[in-house]
Length: 231
Length: 336
Image 1 (cartoon, helix red, strand yellow):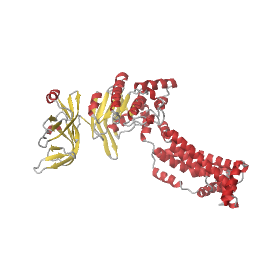
Image 2 (cartoon, helix red, strand yellow):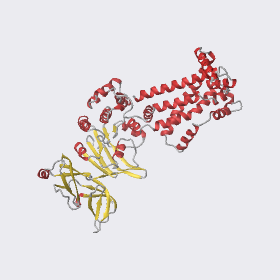
Image 3 (cartoon, chains in turn yellow, purple):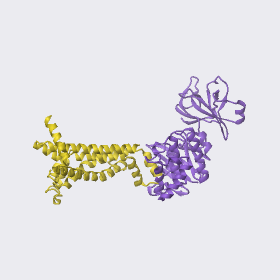
Image 4 (cartoon, chains in turn green, cyan):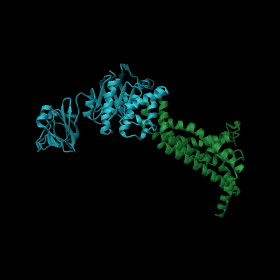
């Protein structure tokens, strides 16, 4: 218990001193997770719409696969992407392994199903009269989809927030594809794992506090958004 | 004619919900589509709004053949607006809701503002511009929905049960609005209703639907029950509320009947007649084009149309206990 309390106070001091290494780690984490969430949003939201409203054979199977992928272990994604981008992989010549780009690819694959699956749920919950009303007021298919997206905006925002939460807190993909290189691919979670291995808890606890603060900040913003929408 | 329908069917889950051999709806008039729940009124309205496709048959809109493809229906939708039974408002302000269709039609900012103000004023909600639209009451929502539709200067307004979910004060406002927009702007108004009384009052033309088909006479006082054979061999209709009517030979099982209100007779006899009728108290009395409508609460609400002289001679009052005689020619069997 003393160890935890001592580490906690030391971590607060470290945060207060704006330690350069700590800031670098946080910056890498936010950059990589931010980009992967952006990619997942611009692909996962349209994918969710397509599955929710499209009429195509095997639609049920696609939904089941997306839901299955929600439980995808990060190490499986790590292994899968590794097989493509390692020296012997078909994308080996691109020399992506142990780079932020590799981490972004892996994290995007991890959360595209999250965004798509939650988007499907969000847009399916939107009353059918919204699309009918938009159409009778003169909207074409794209404009009608935009109306539905507008009405499902809280659900879609929640999907994107959940996806960001999943990648900012994951270790497997970052470790396997990023390699935990100091100042380059070291993220909050990989740094915490390393510090734990070394038996050093101060930086690990400090990063844990930052991670929790980010999670709290995001959810607080989402709640504010929700209350504004429903006001 | 604004719409001409020929040989149109619509099928849901293997069941034919609309089967219209021939139907013409006049331009510039108010037309009521009447019928009980499940008669196919809403389905027909949705096809007339170019929002759904029939399984077969043809539809001409303003003498132009309608091809049920998205590219052909989309421009037609710009001339016709459908108002749902429970209109839905986008979760924005009333102003933004009304602006939606105008923006799609590329109206300028100033033009949009003028049109929105003019139409909100028409429905008496000009001070609601910045109100959150999804927070309005049922009647206010209906009125904003009318204003939102009118803002687009449509040639046709289709209203699905416009009075079903509003209070009496808003009902009067909506009836007067529909009449006004038809008269002053020449907009064709088509609305559905299961309430024949006010619908006939408002409409120039009336179409009755039952089981997805237009029927040529008034179908009112529709009762569901079962046909049973009595000990003496006669077949009787019996419904859950105690109504008993003689039926022709050969009927059995579930039966739906319609009682022609003009053929029913009311008398003051406190003791009910044999069994061929029903008794109850007078619930409502109103004047109509073809006589006085007396609605009797006999478990189900039964409408009777009395000639004016007969009404004056009998002078029934609301709450009076009466007997409704049902002669056999008043009973129409809808299905056996």
